[in-house]
Each structure stands twice: as C-alpha cells, then as structure tokens.
Image 1 (cartoon, rainbow, N blue to C red):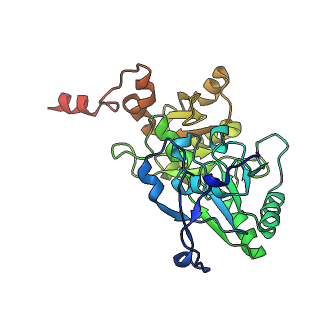
Image 2: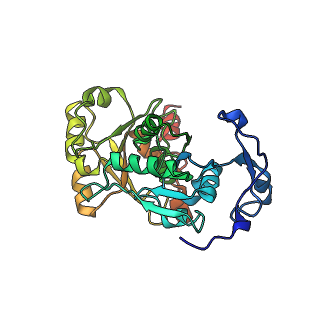
Image 3: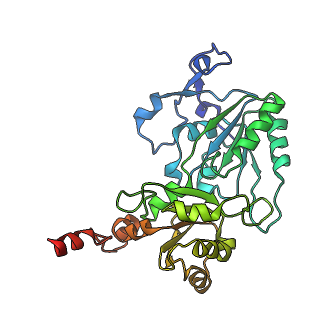
Length: 318
C-alpha cells in the first residue's frame, strides 16, 4: 500500500518513555480513527507503537467489528503488517496506506511458509527499526502459535506486546447462536485442536478422557479429521445422537452452519459439501441454537424460547 497522509497519523502526547508499561508513550487519535467510530473514542489514550517493537495482535474470527481498539490502534501505526490467511480484506484495509503488507498464511494442504521463517521475518523487520504488526486470526495464544513467535522475539532481544483477540471457539459460536456454556447443558467446555503441524490427529491428547469428561468440546482445524474424531468420541461412549454443529466462515456475511449428530456428522458434511475453515462443537449446548440463532432471526427465523423443552417438562410434571 502506498500514499499515506502524515496528518492522519496519531500524534504522540508524551515524549517521555521507558522500558516498562507504566512509562510507555501514549497517543491521541486525532483523525486516525475510522470515521464510523464515535467521537468520544478519539480522546482515548492508547499506547504508541514503538519503533523496533513487534505487536502480536488477534484479529478475531472475521467480523471487523470484533476487533479491539488496541488492534485498530496498532494497524494505524504499523510500518509492516505480517498477516494470516484468515484475516479479511476489510480488516487489512484499516492498516496505514503506506504500510508494507506481508502474507504469511498457513492453510492445510497448501504450500505455506514455515513457522521459523515467519518468526525470522518478524525479527528481521524489527531489527531494521520497523513497527511490526503480526496480525493473526482469532487470538494469538489460542492455537495461533503466538507463543512460539513471542519466544523467538525474546530470544532475539526484541520487545513485544500481545493484543488478545476474540477466538472463534467463543465469538464464532456466538454468531451461530451457540453459547460456549449454558447452565442447563454444560458447566465446562474443552477446546482442542484437531490438526497437528504434520497434518495428523493429535496423538498426545487423551481423547477418551476428553470425550468422557467434557460435556462440550470445541474443535479447531478438525474438519479434515472429522471421521477419526467422531469415531474416537463414539468409542469413548458419547451418544450417537449427540448434537454437533459446524460453523464455516464464522461471523462473516457468508457464515454457514450445519447442524447434525455425532453418528451422522461425516455423512452430512459430505452431502453438504461443507469445507474449511470451520469450527466444530460437540454437545447438547448445540440445541440452544433453536432459541439463540440471532443471525437467523434477522432473516426471518422464528426462535424457540424453550429450546431444551424444560418449560414443557415442568408443565407436564406440575
């Protein structure tokens, strides 16, 4: 991207800075915030992106409205943006016009940069005195390898900051009308990855213990291994009729939700031609979607105020 207007860049409000968070500089937004945001936000003091620093920033599940203010602040100041495959164009459009944009996406089954090369690039640009933004889908520390990249920065003596993002296993499910927890279905939730770096189902997970101990399981990057995972859950004793939902392109306009059961999930995914990227949730909490599918309601779906049938049960027992 080229052609920035210096007048639209944040202006430092405090030139006294040290190495600690308490001493960091702050910036006033001035004209840097997108016009759609309320004027009151322009007066917030947000940290200055120091030269030679790397910020590991979560971009959320996809909807630009789910970005944090710290994330937008970082994008307005960054000299270099190293971004993942699932970061959309609308979000990338919030970067400074003269920022260098570097694609570092990893997609299963496709040629992808190696993790060590991505980390090395972050170090390289930071040592050149650039403000380097590592923009990752979801949250950097939730199956995002943010910890690996941060440790590489520590090893190279590079200062860094972490900006959490909304992970798809929570935010994406919310957009599908599925809560991560609900007191009538589950008081615990387990997040797992269904895909190791080499492309295999994670063998270092105790799938039996997870299946038997967690009422709700949310699986990331698991679509390609759905047959193995559903079989493991069935063998561990989860009921074949247990609800399962797959959410594709969560929080985006083309979001697609497939509701099925543990025994039919593989067949239904194949019949629907359902493809990645997707988040998968196993558990009775999926039934809540009949009452909480707020996006579906916008398109005319009639929601059920008693999706679990609990009121009906109470009336029958009265």
